[in-house]
Amino acid sequence: MSERNDQNQIADPDGIKFGFLWLAPGISRGNLYAFIYTAFSTIGLLTFISIATTLVLNSHLQIPTDQQGTISGRLVFVTEITQILLFGVVGVMADRVGRSHLLAIGMIVMGLSYLFYPFADSIGELTFYRILYAVGLGTSTGMLATITTDYPQEQSRGKLVALGGVFNGTGVLVVIMLLGGLPKMLVGAGYDEITASLYTHYTTFGCCMLGALVAWFGLKKGVPAKHEEQLPLSRLAASGLRAASNPRIALAYAAAFVARGDLVILGTFTILWGVTAAVDQGIDPSEAVSRGRLILAVASTAGLLWIPIMGTIMDRFNRVTTMFICMTLGAVGYLCVGLVEDPLALGTAWPYFALLGVGQISAFLGAQTLIGQEAPRLERGAVVGVFNTSGAIGILVSSWFGGMLFDSIAPAAPFILIGFMNGAVALLAIIVRIKSPGLAVRRGKHPDFI
Image 1 (cartoon, rainbow, N blue to C red):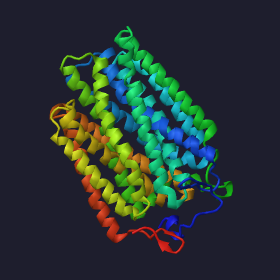
Image 2: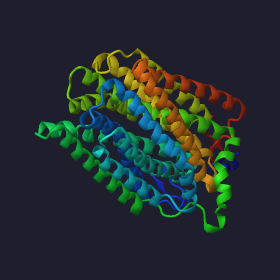
Image 3: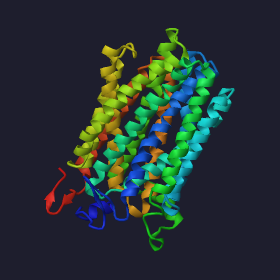
Image 4: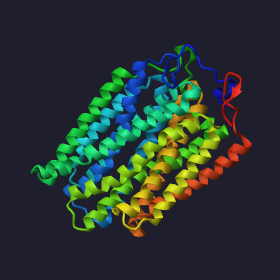
């Protein structure tokens, strides 16, 4: 049983109340502001890889569209293999070294990968730069997930996760609309396709460096545990796996497997679907990217508008119950994409992509909130590391099979696969809710969770 369930959740007066949030003791308003910007920049900038890949495959390497789904899936596969090898190490380092500097280093490495990406002259070289991206991605997002569990008090956990989700989604939209639209704008200004791509990648590199500076100087330094409380490395290394004996943590790991796969399917295959559809119609690559990004923008906007509602629900009900709700929404959203015929058709396709965005963000928020509630304080980085590793394995499976399904069956096939996976975790949530729901979270004497 997690330490969270061993105590009534009464606000700790040593923590700061900031609006509707109770922050954990030791977290300042400045730390919260830095967290908000980091949530905005980290998730937004990691999604640029989908735009970068379509630019490089079409403008630089000129790969035929009927091969791009498989290549994109394999690049994601390599990314996730790297992260699987990395997350456990990063999680243990987070509990012994600290979060802020690791996150900043991750942003720097991610930025360097974007700087080098358009100079690849083969798929092999592109794969090498994708591994570099994976190192930066795994380090930065691993720390962001850990920080999200560190900063709130329990009664504000769902709200802080939702707040982070709002800025995650805003960052994704800004990257899609501004950086995704930059190649078209530069081509319109007279630059050729390759030069426009290079300048777009340079700009993204600069954005990563700014995010690194904010993380380095703005986030709380150090680790949550005092030196005398720190667990030995041998225990930390195994604690993430051992924590799965808690059925709710096991459920969170399963949800991460699917929810992280959700995010990659959404980010990779929506843009790729729109771009390949546009290129097949004879549209230039920069214009095709501009059209393809609108699909992800629709899904992201719908998810962004849904986040405040989901955040309120997560702080009102038992979080295993909300996990069932979240994964059911994910299943419905992804399965409905199977009804889409033309992804560029505004009136008929985009409502389905909006529902997809609601389902995807619900699954992501539900998993993040549940692991934040259940992860023990002294082993939090290691437990979140296994949580992230589970997500990386999910992305690996989803991207590998999704890429093949995209090319061999239909562009909607990867989404249907993820829909069924969401449904399976929803059924698991029912079992856990019956057998191990966890104790009610209370404010004072009044039960607040059903």
